[in-house]
Length: 133
Image (cartoon, rainbow, N blue to C red; front, side, top):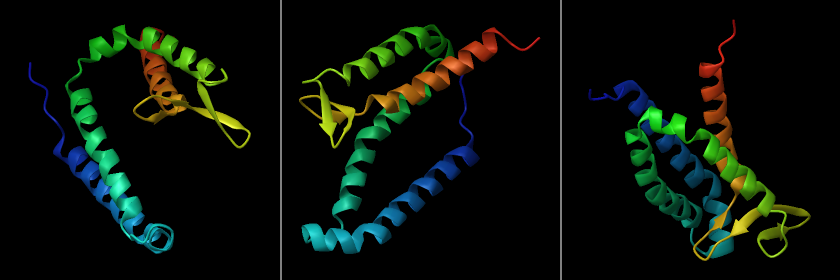
């Protein structure tokens, strides 16, 4: 069975995406111009992030819900491990008095973002498996 995509949902997604880009452009242009001599600096960074994230988004649309259900608890275990690793000196980056990031050779990663996804999947799975009686 082929799954269809709701055109209204896709349209809302694209509209929010456009509004976000325009907001970043209008709100950050003066500051970016002063700090980096490029009024589009923050806009370009956001655009690059979008270019990397969009294939992940498309891939996630293709995922089978049964696959997500099967891998919820292992993902939650990995997330908890990553949240603990943030506290390990040398792995977690300290900024000010907070340790929130893990530095990899390619990018800096904030495990709490993955924890949000893991929590949503966990709550969805448990609410389906243990409905209120």
